View 1 (cartoon, helix red, strand yellow):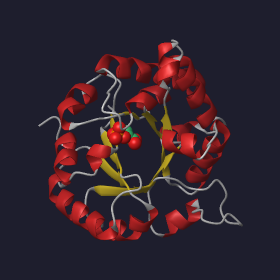
View 2 (view 1 turned 90 degrees about the vertical axis):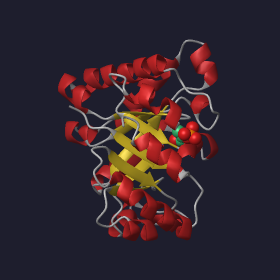
View 3 (view 1 turned 120 degrees about the vertical axis):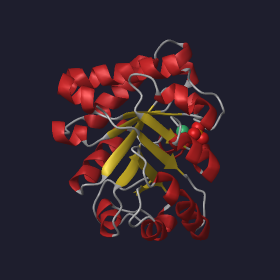
View 4 (view 1 turned 180 degrees about the horizontal axis):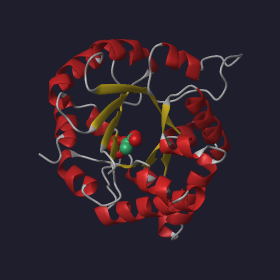
Length: 250
Ligand code: PEP
């Protein structure tokens, strides 16, 4: 039985004082939660957030890392640096990074390997554009992205990888994929993983949906057979909305 994972992606929002207040507010809400709750925060919030989340049910993640361990990469942050302060998760290959920072499938793959090398759980994002969906290419695009992202990973590493299916046209737009469409896209990712790594891995790997998840649609989405929770952008910035998403089944 796969557990549910609810991960927030704060993107380039939240100063440290607001981050601490948010985590303090969320702590009692997730105290007895069966769901895994992760907040992926900006680099400048990491240290404060890790301290605030100590001894709580909240896990802290970063939103990116570099594919090398050290070196002349001005402005970048590496996996050993994240690991040294206790970061447990990292988002890799978010569509905003693929689009604005030209992250290729090859870079995404290198970053995934680096995260695993340092025992940081990656949340790897895949998703199609509106054009690709309208041309009937969504499944081809996302299964290709997943194959390239996971290339060279061991079964154990794939099992420790969280996948997020995030149709690009649904991110930050208020448009959500229907629960059936999201479920069938996620099923096709699971099938691809099954072909590459075996049915046992496909059955166990956690796959989230992301794209305008709100308290009003979380229950329908997260109740689908193949959707194991969500990667939440905008609604993870508002404590009450994020709480209601975490408590979607109450
Ligand atoms: C995201 O950025 O990963 C995301 C899903 O954003 P939103 O929930 O705002 O669409």
